[in-house]
Image (cartoon, rainbow, N blue to C red; front, side, top):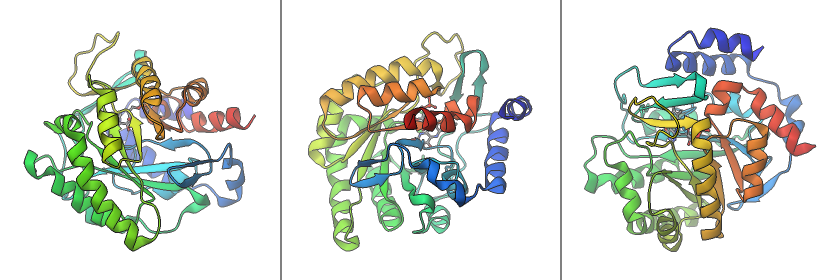
Length: 325
Ligand SMILES: Cc1cc2nc3c(=O)[nH]c(=O)nc-3n(C[C@H](O)[C@H](O)[C@H](O)COP(=O)(O)O)c2cc1C
């Protein structure tokens, strides 16, 4: 079934196909009575209970318009966003390209976002099936570099009461100079963790801050140690890459999918020996075997994105079956 839909969808511009896919998931809105089969290998991570270790990566539901319907597909967690404080339209289109032969995408979305107010209105405290809701936060493109910390603080204030965890995105390759923040993660995280601590006092529950890292930085271990000492609770390893491993295509933007797999796996290995904090695997997870391999390598959770574009929701279903068997 997904093959037919995919053949149709792949005739469209990737972003348009994605919008239709989100709409289809919302309309199909699967049924709570099937919920129980989503309780597969539940884990306690970041002080939160995940009904299974497989989540939806950031960027799929940027504006939180379909998170409950996506949760009903069976994900253990959904990461909405990346959300910016103010609405912004992102890079000019076309800005997502399929590399079909390689099972990859190249995107330079540049954080199109409905803005924090609009997204916050779509979130609430209901958690269908016990899904965990993360919100990925990032600065507006036109916020000057020295004011970006204020954007993150504003986003913490807006989403602390609504999210189960917050993902600090310092690793999109498509917002100018964003990745420079990775070089000074200590001071940034210290400021953000203080604000988070205020909220934890007020909310009376944990509010983990995880940091999403780039696969391209030379300073992975240093960044992890700095962020950990400053109060981070975990890491997502990692975002799309500006490298083009075995890919002749030179379109600008971040590469995701199969060619990113070996790089992401290597970074995951390095991350899990550097920190005892939970590491969430993202990058090149295209098959149930990839899910199993990431977990065996030490990932606490695994996130999907490009694998879903190529294999459809069957990837989640088959992966859960593998983990449950
Ligand atoms: C079209 C597109 C948009 C994305 N947008 C975001 C985003 O807003 N925030 C973010 O942290 N990651 C974003 N990502 C990165 C994914 O969350 C994921 O980390 C990356 O694609 C690697 O995983 P994959 O190879 O399984 O796709 C995006 C990826 C794609 C393909």
